[in-house]
Image (cartoon, rainbow, N blue to C red; front, side, top):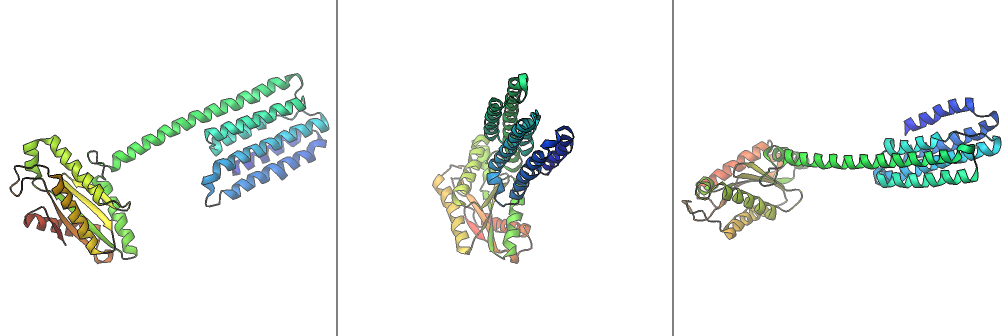
Length: 337
């Protein structure tokens, strides 16, 4: 926006050397008292908190306002001094909006149509450019059309780039088998939640979950069934830990972790019990298990006020110790640290 204002100011210096003296007053009025204040108004709007919500409309209104102010200047120059004021500013304003402001395709198309209609109407009113009037009109309309096509292609390329970036983010943060957070993203998000809870000393819990006798299951039923069991664990976690703030991830192999915030310790026990219940209801056969003939899950839970712990790693260590106790006590159960 500032660059646009500087360009208009530079045009004023050059144009005042070319236009007839009798047009100087009208010219300065158009540039300094109409066009530059319009840009200043747009600049002021950018400081509004909600500017991005109406930015495209603001860009469209700005481009059209300055364009039509320029049309009026062309008309006045012809009426007052029979001077053919250059039309190139019309194209420059439009292209500035399309490619510098970053107007979206449909807004650029609207600007092109309204600007073209205005210029053609002006040519009907005044034959400003003599025998070249309609050739120039065609050039303006054609150039604006090319600009809109360029804007459309840019929008398509940007859309593809955004899709590719989203895929890359997914690949870098999600576990490919379960679509839960991978370990790196899991730790990053867990540290973020821990820091947030620690500011106000709120309660949170770390659940460490591990499938019981998973090696025997894999050896007996094969890796494809093992993958299905791991995906089932992820599905159960998504069904139990439903809040948007709950952080779920695959810690490694058949071990999973959930980090959640909450107000009462009782709620954490209910969630752990629900995970075990859903595994019981799933009744996935595991004939080689020495404890039971179905696949099960053991859970260790560390919970408390965030300020009671040194770090999220401290909570994970305690939850892991509780998980070890659950395994030692016979598996298919949870232990609270």
